[in-house]
Image (cartoon, rainbow, N blue to C red; front, side, top):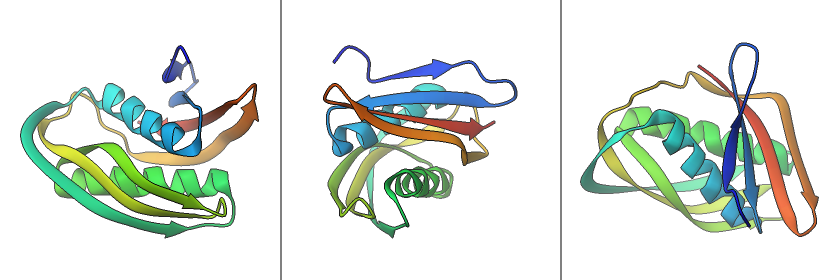
Length: 134
């Protein structure tokens, strides 16, 4: 796999396309994309949170997960970089997310949106597109 993610042009907001050989790598690459967008100044202080979410389908579950990460990033002043867990029945996600506290962020994200969300599997690779409201 060449790319883990890429930023795409979008009229008013910011579109991200994430790739993964499986759902866990897709989630972790989405975390990497958010970190790359934020361009944080990280500290060495580690943090972790537990995640236990359920939604109606896989695309909604991933958006729900990323929205929870967005909230926890600002609440805990932490950039979350690594998901360790499982996606069950393509409707549940459970595990821990590890990260590092930050001193500052170069950019802000207001929300992870459902608008133009797209998830597909082709040639042994998951691709997920989503828009962040900036």
